[in-house]
Length: 230
Image (cartoon, rainbow, N blue to C red):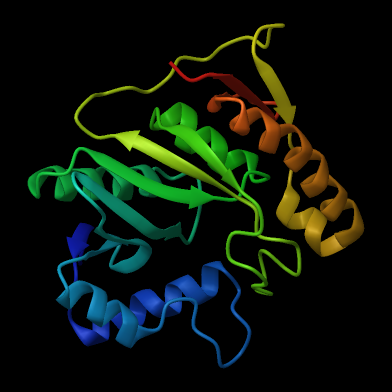
């Protein structure tokens, strides 16, 4: 049985990856999150589609392409079941691929209201959120985002250093911003409240980033730490 992470380009494997993305993001019927032919084109153009297999089944996947200069851009990464180390293994596979092609920085975006992803990106990987974008994609209307506006944080991850961050205690220094415990569930059960959280976080983060702050950490109880960029 297949085990581990593979760099895939075959149409049948890419269709399997596309189906997995649809499952993770709960795509409406008849719509692809990433269509198989698009994945095929990205792989053919020199991008990387990584597929993680566990016990013979596809457990996660990621897609990355080259950016300007020494950067790569991670378009998407997702796993069927969280907290099994597969997401971390996928990011490390992307990192090895990028370093092998001379890149030293990886960038991607994520929803600032998803605290679990923030902890993974900022604390587990040691990346830094360097920009806040309002309604980055416009309407998406999938099973995760719903009709909420698509604000995003842009993450920058240095690939040529090992920089996971230690745990820290919330103090009075810097700027702090709280997010809800589970925004995906809140969007499903109380969209109005989810929208108010979006506005509240935006009102803290937009001026903070405009004034030279970056997001460097996330506590276990859902507080971002923003510090002045050095």
